Image 1 (cartoon, rainbow, N blue to C red):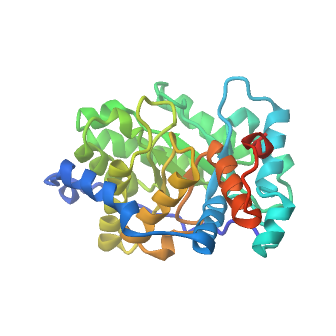
Image 2: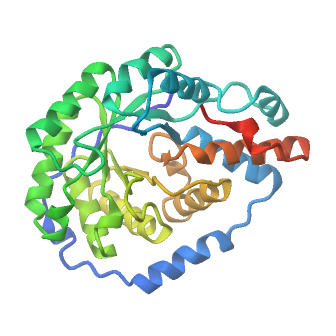
Length: 318
């Protein structure tokens, strides 16, 4: 019943001619993003189905400085059973679970124990999250540690300065080394798009990450001043589409940070549906990096089932 991972992206040699002349019309991208949610209306059982799918694609996450094994165990229990029994029964669903649980490397072992037998993968941030400003050998050692502890997915962070200096070879080599360190684990490359200044930089960094072997590209750490936005996400999924057209390979997408409501969950799924099609609306190719969003989704689904809104305190995460 676990998340079926997509095949690894083997990457390709660095090819700057794929993106060096890219031009992005920022106002047009913003207009497109603004109209996404107005072009498709989701009501009643259709909205409920999309919200259920959002849960299946969610990386339930705790990345706090005061994380404890007990908190991680509670989060894992929620990942195993993200909806209350009466909501599942009202929706006519059996058991369901989230796409993954994402924690710091030192919490991986606790998450693996808590999720044993569930099929839910454990993801770990690594490489000096969130800034990534550590020597490369130490960042690679952190990846090895997390994988040795049982992480099946690694969310790495890039050196933003490589993008800002347009040093694409350095960025490629760094990500390729991280990909190699991940071994059998899937690698999500966090681009920290709020630090990259322009949509052109976002597109170029996305393309280099995929060429270097990223299995997913991810918007943000959640710690930047600006995290996932629809215009940035639109730019990244267009890069995904272009990479697929050139290589025949499918790379996943993970928006993260700043998404808190069921409405947000619908908006990003609509983006995927409109730009890439229904094949991307599954955990192997799409993840939502959020946790507080789950409480609002559960609240909306309870309203769909019972006709009443419950207090948000009834849908705590952990």
